Every structure is written in structure tokens, then in C-alpha cells.
Length: 171
Picture 1: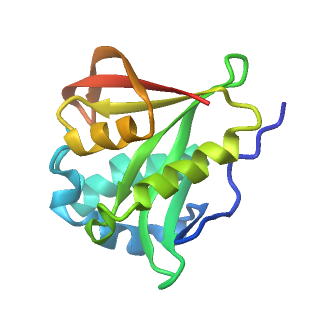
Picture 2: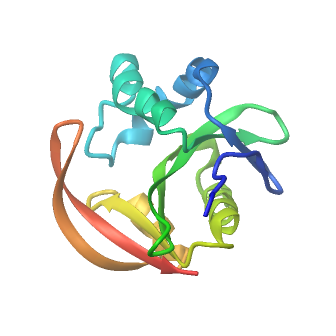
């Protein structure tokens, strides 16, 4: 089965389009806010060199990442991507998501996740979300989607140890 993950996906207030190399400046402008990364294990991702090496370049290389665009202003407001795709198990993970603080608490994350879930719903039956245990904002967000905590594991991100939570959403 050929799965086309990267295309333009449009919702009411946001649209997603595939990440490109030319998006670095606009995306880093959003990511440079330390508060966005405060609950993330690699809380220094707001630093340009770290962001480029540990977030932007891997996202670009994955060829599964999107920029999130505010449809009203046409401004880049964040990013998200698909990963851990398993066509046999009909499962996929959604993550590496961050959104500018001006969009927190306004339904942007829910619209984003709904768009991404709907985009793969023709073949995926399970969506995974992986969240750092200390990231209360992300945990609450995936729980609001109906995802259920299934597992905890010790892991590393950017060389930093943390407890990774696995949330499962059956669709």
C-alpha cells in the first residue's frame, strides 16, 4: 500500500504543508521561545544551533514533517510530523509537535491532531502519541483526544534521559 502522508491539509483555522528547507527562519522564530520547550526533556531546543541540529534537520530528513500555518495571517505557527509508521499493524505515531504560545488554549492543537488523524484514517486503525512524563501540557492534550496511556519506558532525547509515555488512540 502506498501511503501519501505529505500533502497540503487544510482545516478551518490552520493548514499544514510539507516542511521545506526554506522554512527554517520562520519556524525558528516560533521555536526560539524558551517557554515552548520548558516541559520538554531537551529544554534547550529554543537555542538556534540545538534546534537546527536536533529538531529541524531530522524533521526535514524524515520527509514526514509539516509546518502549521495560520490561514488568516499565512504565518508559520509551529510544526508536527508522522513517524513510526507500521502498515502491517495499521499504526502510525504523531508527534514532534510544537505550536507558538499565541495559539495555546485556542483549539489549534486539537484541530491539528484532528487533521492529521483524519488524513491517515483510511488505512490507520491506531495512532500513537509519545510524551515525556513531565510534559503536563502535552499529556493533557493527548488525553483530551481520547488517547489512553499504555506504557512507560526510560528513553533519551538529544542525550537527555527521561520517562517516555506511550498513549494509544484507536480510530
